[in-house]
Image (cartoon, rainbow, N blue to C red):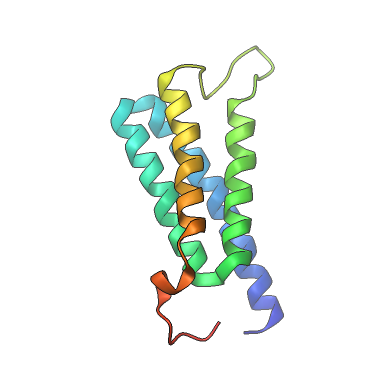
Amino acid sequence: MSMLVRVVSVAALALLGVVAATVGVGSHRSMGYGGVIIGILMVALVGVFAKAWQAWSGFLAYAIAWGVMAWVYSSTGPGDSTLVADDVRGALWLRGGTVAIAIVAAVPRSVYVGRDVAT
């Protein structure tokens, strides 16, 4: 794989982290606890995709982008507003997404892609 393709792939996974955080923030608030579950599952599944496709570099780009955007969305905005409220659903969304990323990171890549795939 050429270096340019690798860089573009990792950048795409970082952008996917931003998208996953944005969709999750919207769904956790608009769809109740079902949205929290869907958002956490989405975070985990995109993490599996990132780790399977680009190994650690892609997974780290995804996880860091998700974490930064989750932090931005949970921060207080200009009008003292936040997108992730300090309530049970907000805590479940942030902590659940973090745990999902940690679980995906703990599982070896060979579980996702098999042992006969060249790295």
